[in-house]
Image (cartoon, rainbow, N blue to C red):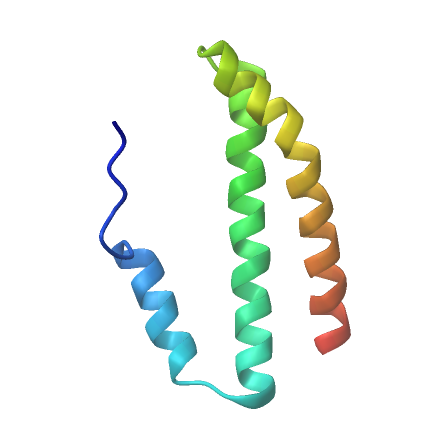
Length: 84
C-alpha cells in the first residue's frame, strides 16, 4: 500500500510560498519558469528510467510517457517565450 504525503516537500513548499507573494506578470513569469523547470526535471527522470530502469513496468511507463512530457515542455517553453 502506498501512502501519499500529507503536504509538499521543502522544495515545493518554498516555490509555493514564493509564488504566493507575486501577482500579475511577475507571477505569470515565475509560474511558467517553475513549470519549465518541473517539466525538464520530469523529462530527465523519465528518460533515465526508460533507458536504464530495472522494473519492466516502470520502464515501459517511462518510455510511453516521456514523449508526452516532452510535448508539454515544448508547449510551456512557447508560452515562456511569449511572456518575455
